[in-house]
Amino acid sequence: MPKRVDHQQRRGEIADAVARLAATRGLGEASFREVAAEAGMSVANIQHYFGTKQALLLGTLERQSTVLGARILQQLETAQDAPPLEQIRTVARALMPTDDVSSDAMRVYLSFAASALTDPDLRTTQAFQRGFASIAFFEDRLRAAAAVGDLADSADPAAAAPALLSLILGLSLGVLLDQFDRAHAGTLLDGHLELLSA
Amino acid sequence: MPKRVDHQQRRGEIADAVARLAATRGLGEASFREVAAEAGMSVANIQHYFGTKQALLLGTLERQSTVLGARILQQLETAQDAPPLEQIRTVARALMPTDDVSSDAMRVYLSFAASALTDPDLRTTQAFQRGFASIAFFEDRLRAAAAVGDLADSADPAAAAPALLSLILGLSLGVLLDQFDRAHAGTLLDGHLELLSA
DNA sequence: ACCGTTACCATACGATTGTACTACAAAGAA
DNA sequence: TTCTTTGTAGTACAATCGTATGGTAACGGT
Image 1 (cartoon, protein in one colour):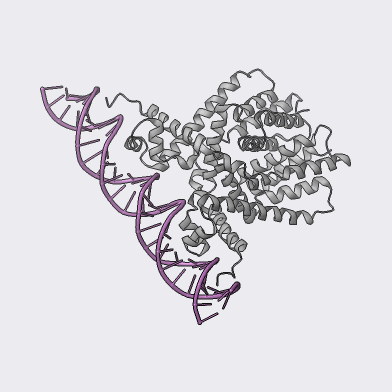
Image 2 (cartoon, rainbow over the protein chains, first blue to last red):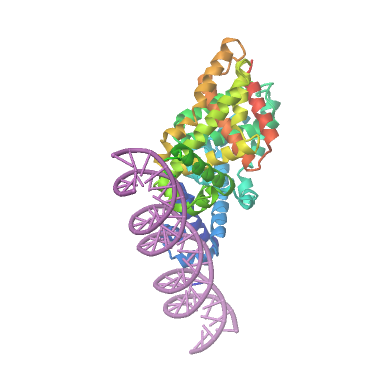
């Protein structure tokens, strides 16, 4: 049954297994053997789809970023006609650990971020930078808010956008470290958006 | 020459070696052998001061948090008579990766934070929670700012304090991931403080 | 019908891991 | 001085790591 398998899908299954492991036990526990057990296949088969471990991790990051991007776009559709600041809130909440799914996603993302702290190759990865693409979206929506007079005079979209993403990441970290709970993080985010609104 | 050594100091030397390793090559590379080489002593001697690896990492975190705390208090003395919001800026800048020393410190901190994502024991560690002690300081100074009319009406100290620390952590992550440079992060922080000030 | 490609597996290899054990020299207590 | 503690080191061990290799079975193309 060789030709029958969809390579892309198989790689996806494996990458999901890595992500599941990273979310529950940390990236450091994602050895070939553990990944194989989690994915329900042999170690050698994982080698077959991703030759080396670095490629496995890179592929996982790639997958994670596209899945996350798709989820955000989907969420955004539900708020298509909402005012700009409301759209920002929607995306922000999709990014933050509001439920188990998004919590795991953020855990995986932060695990990779930690690895990237000491790995320049990982830092310049396209898939990794894509995670910051939301900055452009935020800036665009902030400008739209300014255009309709919803933005505070003292707020500069070019500065508020990266600050907003930073705040989101920081809040997410706080939630995942049990510093405050999910609801509280949402309140804090709302407070910040309040500061930004006219 | 047994009794002559100061246990606390020796443990400090070793913990510093671990921190140096974590900052440059990541926590995952901090094996007993690597730590021994970095500290310039035998593996068995590290076992002697910290029995197990978990204890070694815990001790390193403990040390890192006290050293960081001391550095912040020292920085704070230079701004003892400054207005509240200026004191906040001082502490924030001491926390953020503004130079190589603070960059390494933040890298170490974030590495431990990543481990804590999937390690409940580490998350509830006293040394770890102490890292969040600055929230109390921020809230206190924000209240002081409100008392003298320096705080924006729409800002609530109880909410702005944790949000501020979250922003700082997020900005720091951005800097260490080469998302924006140190100066830019400083500007973004100033922009946020601007939003908070009356 | 046959052959080559391909998905999948079992296993082995050398390196590295955390930890345990033993030894020894130096110094304070007796 | 002798004895006991203690700082330091060498080394051995089982486990786990990433990776390489060889083999098997099933399909697609000819």
